[in-house]
Amino acid sequence: MATKEIILNKIQILITNNFKSPEAAFAFFDKDSNGKLAKKEIVSLLKQAEISGFLRGIVASKLIEGYDKDGDSLIDWEEFKFAIDEITTDANK
Image (tube, rainbow, N blue to C red; front, side, top):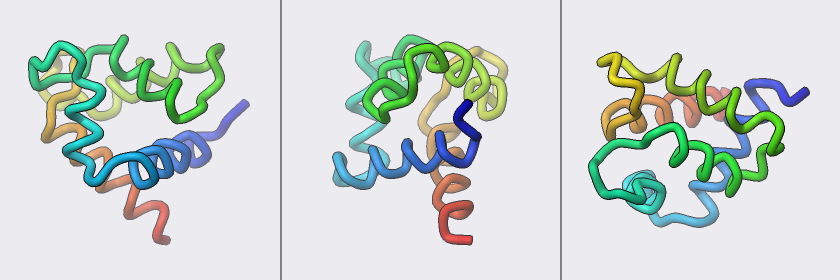
């Protein structure tokens, strides 16, 4: 099973290699342009990051659980930015 570090690394690689900025990645995956990522939008991000289909739903739920600070079951820009900053910090250790 993929570890948290492997999953976060794949997300970082996806964003770094395919988008000019984290903002561009967020806008791309925010399909309904409501300023928040729903679970299905996060699953799409995970698919692009080449996370196994079996794990995507579980990982999406865990990401929401871990980074949804306002409890709305969505990831807004500030929560996404916090997650990306944490991923980047962890990757540079």
